[in-house]
Length: 293
Picture: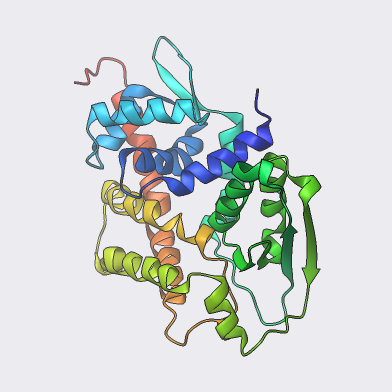
């Protein structure tokens, strides 16, 4: 049986690999932002109804639930004669650790500390070495060289969790650094260590897809849910891939601050009303004497 730390690292990686807008990705988003708010359990009929409001067919919801069960995110559990699912303890840990990152984007300031990860992994551990590189990249680490990775110090605990989950502690040495000396400029170094064009494209796509939400007036609670869930679903990947580099290391036209502001304003406007609608709609569906088709 996998340890909770291993399950957690795997769940985080799978979450990032989910394609925004897919049934599985939307299901993960609804679980994290709404089902946890209800206590962590939901009847499958109610879950299907919520996702149907986002355009997800019932069969796609059931397929997504099956995938999430196989990933250790959900366990089947019936309550009061109703079939449903609860969020597992490992998934709850993953969501809890992700909340500050998704809802509170972190940005380095000049002079903040860095975390360096050095490793020399033998060829016999090639698969684990590949997974380590993949997972470090998925939490925002940059590649200085094949065996040396870098990230803000505030990502050190996440990096350590990944190393331990892959049983690679014996091959990894980490350092805390406060000064970086590089050939050329730090901005040029950042452009080599991270794929900044790909990160910028994610920010710009997010702005293009969701920028109009702030111009909408008098949103109902239901509309807040319908608009905010796809926005959150696309956004929640970005704070993992973007480490929050200091402005001095980024291009002058970096779109990150604009997308951070968009998400913060949308969250302030939509999260509480959308949660209110989810709770009230489920209560209405389950009133005695009401037949739900």
